[in-house]
Amino acid sequence: MKSKFVLKAMALILVGAGLVFGGYWLGTQKNMDGTVTSTTAASEKIDPKTGRKILYWHDPMVPGNKFDKPGKSPFMDMQLVPVYADEGVDDGGVKISPSLQQNLGIRFASVRREEVHDAFEVVGTTQFDESASEVVQSRVTGYIDKLYARSPQQRIKRGEAIASIFVPDWIAPQEEYLALKRGGNTELAAAARQRMRAMSIPDSLINQADRTGQSQQHYTLTSPVTGVITELSVRDGAMVAPGMSIAKVAGLSKVWLVAEVPEALTNSVRSGMTVEATFSGDANRKYSGKVREILPGISTATRTLQARLELDNRDGSLTPGMLMRIRLNTDKSVSRLLVPSEAVIASGKQSIVLVAGENNSMQPVLVTTGRDIGTDTEILSGLSEGQKVVASGQFLIDSEASLKAVLPKFAGNSKTIQPAASPVYRSIGIVEKVTPKALTLSHKPIPELEWDAMTMDFNKSRPDVFSEIKAGQEVEFSFRENDDGYLLESVKPAGGKQ
Image (cartoon, rainbow, N blue to C red; front, side):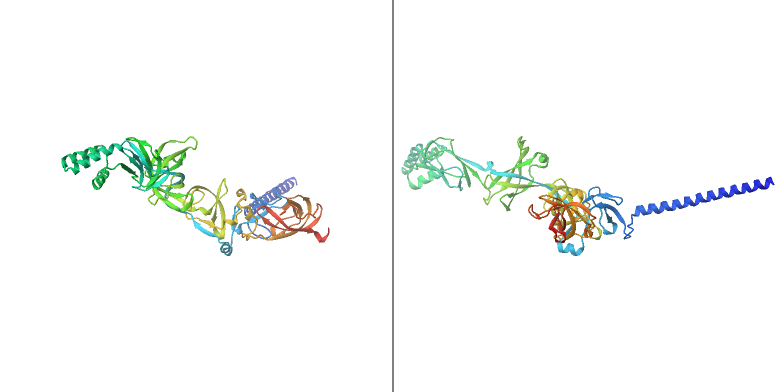
């Protein structure tokens, strides 16, 4: 009897243990299945209402911040809005339909790599070419009988008279020569002619005495080059002596252009480099030349090095003191990544390029720019060869928008960029506060913008508009989006009540 009771007890214990183990096993499997399902659902982030895949949630007012789950925005009194994967835009990008691209005149360009010559631009001023200047001197003692050049900076042509000198010491040798010649003594006449040459009497003056039979008392000094009289040392009646400078004439067939090269570029400039110079007052006036020499020393005031350039000026269009822009080109070419300069959106602290992606999307990319080469800009980082970038149509981007928020003008759930005239939205709300610049309204949900009910500021176009609206009123209002936020179009009491 006792043995039967023991056997029954053992059987019950074994059955209980089996039930416990089976329940544990089933629970484990259930939990594992539930975990997998939960993980899959969490990783996919499927919207249960629409069945669309969600990339993340964000606040349309502050689109640069992303959240991995829905909830209330920490910035505004509203719920976070989902961003779906099938919109084809991530990280703040925008999507533009082909028809809208055509209407807006959006044009694309390819990022390309080219072998280009290094070039940089500096400024400089023109000067007289001192190597082409000529000094007109007196070789004898005499008096200025007549001064043809009246003042410095006077233009003069080659062979044109500068001054006439009366030379008393030349009269007696000429009279002696003419007397010997008339007497028929050729040998003595030849000796007298040689003495006149030794006294620096020009052959032209001796030949004139031969032709006229009279001694020549005046000697005319002429300009040896075509140019400008930079110095004039005498006046009418002044006495001159041998070696005395009468005038200095600077030629204009070539001019010097002294360029101010920044200290950081001193190693990039060398003698013999070709240059292109443009007159700052007329971009169509271009001149070519080369670097003549590098002047020693750096200016302590401007921290620049002076390079002396030589420009061809045979047409005489250049005069000293002209301000010119100078482009210096190096002989060695360098491979560089280039985009059209109009494709780069510069905000002052950083540069942005819109890169074309799949499904007509456009993605803002932060780039590092280098030198401007003609109509192109060098890209040091951020892009790769072959990518397509937006080259025109950047007027859609608000130049004063915060690029850190990645183009908040286009943020939100809209799949396409709205035309320049933004749509008007309407709602009803309670006036919380009235200021000269804005109305603070607690408005109802706005389905067009996927906004929940919240309290926010709406800007006024002028301080004196909507003067009849008071705090606490229920109003019907309309607004549109602009560069500074949301601008009120109309505000009136709800139901026509005052």
